[in-house]
Length: 406
Ligand SMILES: [Zn+2]
Image 1 (cartoon, rainbow, N blue to C red):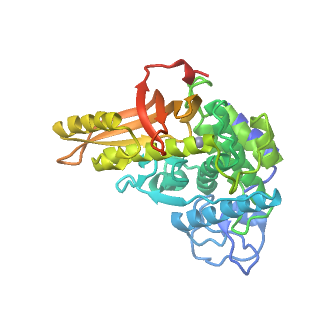
Image 2 (image 1 turned 30 degrees about the horizontal axis):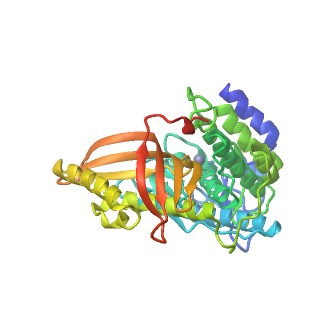
Image 3 (image 1 turned 90 degrees about the vertical axis):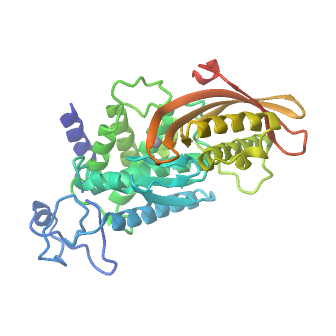
């Protein structure tokens, strides 16, 4: 089946091909010593003595690149792609505030918590895209062998989540699967941009777009129900979403996954109550992560009532007694506010469906003691505005609350 699907893709895409950065002032030269070079026949090799690797991180000129070069070009190019697309709609574009790589040995602290190995993600809380460099490198050269455009596709997918945030498309009336497939479609639309020769950074070589599609296919859900809150889509669905963007471009990605086309992002209007509450939720979530990470209640103390602060402090004390440090990761793409209810002029109830991953480390040795997989935490926060600023007055946790079942 896999083979058929990939062949089907080739049919859709006709001839496509490996990303390489173009020397700025020259015609794209052909790689040497491969069947590709004979087919493309466009100029000489700048490094004729270098061994060529098909679909590795290698330039069309045959010179090896590093993963950093590839990532650098990718980031610049996807940024240009989206900036141009927004400008065409007269929308204000906001680039991610952070784009940062990490390694499994050198995890970093993000607005969504500590990074985890073998991952790439978008963090809505700090508008950042993060990726494990080794993980991406393995996609090109290691066992996964998804080639360089596979790596590009990973970043294009994460960037898609960033765009969803700007356009209000991460509407959690939608299922997770729709949000993920739309990000795949956006990655495909970027692939179309490159394949149409609009990219200043890349030209495609044979097999490139297949690399992106194959990667998404291989990352597709197997045995995960479509309505699962973390569903990304089956292999076929992910492949098709990518192919849709590739074939029909961005407008199909908007139309295909949402009932409405996006509204222009709000710029400098007075933020309404809903926005204020959302911002407050983001701030407390970040503060909570920091509180546990730094073992310091002061990060969250001002945002919560004294009662809630005491509750958190008790948890910290209990962890300290056990010699344990807690690091949490907040999945900001799949977490959402399920409902807001204004109960009186100073009180709002907020139902949230939050996905948390927790890791526990020994304070003494720094070794990982325990790891909790991503867990849905449904909760109702009671927010209070009596002191002229928002505070979390009360938190109610639920085992399995109906408002998180779509
Ligand atoms: Zn995603």
